[in-house]
Length: 123
Image 1 (spheres, rainbow, N blue to C red):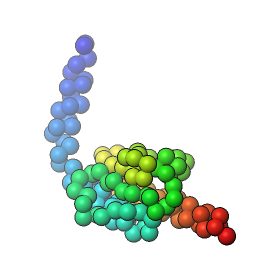
Image 2 (cartoon, rainbow, N blue to C red):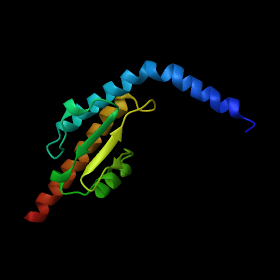
Image 3 (cartoon, rainbow, N blue to C red):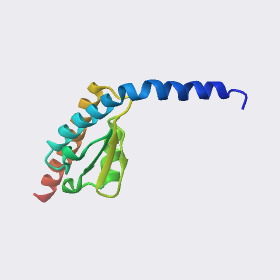
Image 4 (cartoon, rainbow, N blue to C red):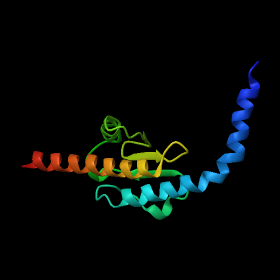
């Protein structure tokens, strides 16, 4: 590899600067977890979130994780499935506090919309 120094420089920056801001990622994950826990169809105990990873259940929503994630992606919020009823969101360097709050709003909106749709189908 001719350009190994470029890769090494990125690694050094990550090792030197990353730990300094890791707490910010963890704080953002706590903010997201508290926000998501307020959504009635989300299953999540914010006290169990100890890193920058937030895993929550959507089984009460009536949506599969694939359906839910597609609706989030349509609104520019990205997450990944854990299984058919759980979703994982991760905070990191490229996610701001404002984006965390916006993601919480989008999740709530998507789940409220699906609940309203489910109620209208029952009528």
